[in-house]
Figure 1 (cartoon, one colour):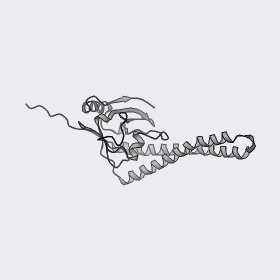
Figure 2: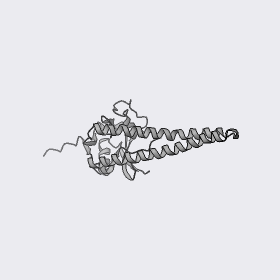
Figure 3: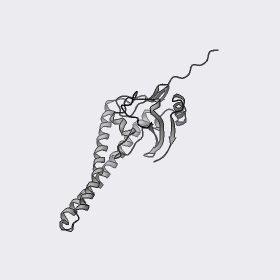
Figure 4: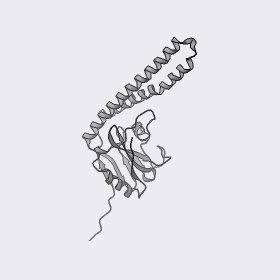
Length: 211
């Protein structure tokens, strides 16, 4: 009786309906939050301008300028969030949803990031694993890279894509959305973690956290 050959790859598929629902929810909540943020920033800037004009001789101009400066990041975050959402919607309209979320092999981890033109490829030494967190009321998996890993690291491919940067190393002006929605994956988290540990030879795992 011959020995069974070891598994060479582990594939995690995607529930298309769950992904489409999450896309719509994330877009709706991000746009709503962006407009609320813009409203707060606009009120702050208008209030500072009013103070500059109405109290010219009262020496309040340093405080008014400080208030205006503090509102600038809010306005920038709105522009950034709306631009990113518009880019995602255009990409969704032009591209089919990939059938595979992630693929593991002895060589490394391959990820199909939502909105990215091609998969992210990461050798195992560059990967710490995933962190399970809760975003918008649903559990997601966030990619955890080893310290110092970037788009130019040897063997790494795809980290320089804008859609990937938005979820792997999000701007401090944007609310993180997570890389994979747990409910959209066709494998449970504990099975994915077992595969991570197996193929990475214990380097990678899934940690639990919360937001």
